[in-house]
Amino acid sequence: MNSFKKQYEVTKREPLYQGVFSLSRYHIRHALFNGGWSEVIARELLERKSAVGVLPYDPILDQVVLIEQFRPGPVPHKANPWLIEIVAGVYEEKEKPEQAAERETVEEAGCTILDLHPISDYFVSPGGSNEHIYLFCGRVDASKATGIHGLAEEHEDIRAFALSAEDAFAMWQRGEIKTGPASVSLLWLQIHRPELRKKWKNS
Image (cartoon, rainbow, N blue to C red; front, top):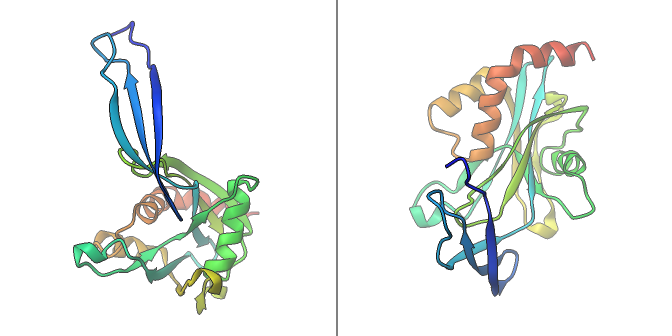
């Protein structure tokens, strides 16, 4: 096991579909833990731009800002497609994640980011997608978070609302928040809220 080298080879990539998302079939072989190499295996991969997610937080009011919008993903499951989320969106090649975080927070929640703190970054569903997301906690004035937001050209219809951090944690505990970025961000805030409030109150 000590001599194991994490190596792989893409022998072929087949584009299958190009739209808002892309779908490709990758032919890959990789090193095995017990030695040697795997056979060439075919894996379909949904490809999309990298994303950012922001949990807006007001350390003075001790409130977070969440958004609600329609998402098609739950429809095949016959589940409620209006989801409670954090601010999120993709960023362009020439755009830094921090810049996208600031832009998306204005577009989706009507709030200006006053400070940003990184939470984490991770691959959302690496078994079938290349999607990668950076998560941030953004200092905002939560009293500005109200109303309907989103870009008309993207057919967005987003409701922004503020609530106490404790109420947001309770929503997650009750299973009312069902998206990964929101779950990770709220659990992070629950752990780091004391030092974050101290840091941002003094800034």
